[in-house]
Amino acid sequence: MIVYVVVAVVVYYLLAFALRYAIPLVLLVVLVGFLAGCAKPAPVVSVAGPDVPDQVLSCKPEPVPPATGTQRAVATYVLDLADAGDDCRQKLGAVRSIVKPETP
Image (cartoon, rainbow, N blue to C red):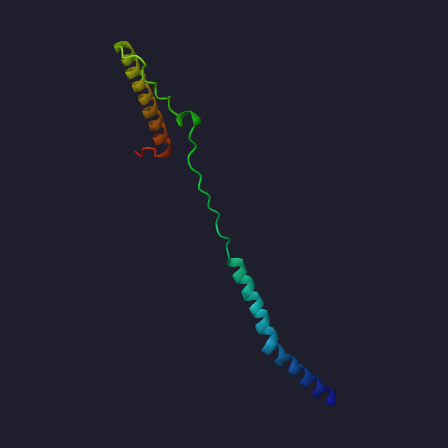
C-alpha cells in the first residue's frame, strides 16, 4: 500500500514538473522554430547600367584650324568641323537610345 502512495506522489511531482517547466519549454522551442522558418533572407539587389559600346563613346577629333587663310583651306576646315560635330551628335543619339529608350 505504501508503494502505491510513493508511486502516486512521484507521478504527481513528475507531472507537476512537466506541466510547470517541460511543456512551456517545449512550446517555446517549437515557437522559435516556427519563427525561424518564417524568416526570409534579405534580397540581394544589384544595379547594372546598360551596356554601351566603346565605339559610340568617342567622337572624331576637332580639326585643326588652317594655317593659311585661303578660302579653300577655310572651307575644308568648316566641312571637317561640321563632319566632326555630326559624328558626335550621331554617337550621342546612339548612347541616348541605349540609356533612355523611347517608350511607345
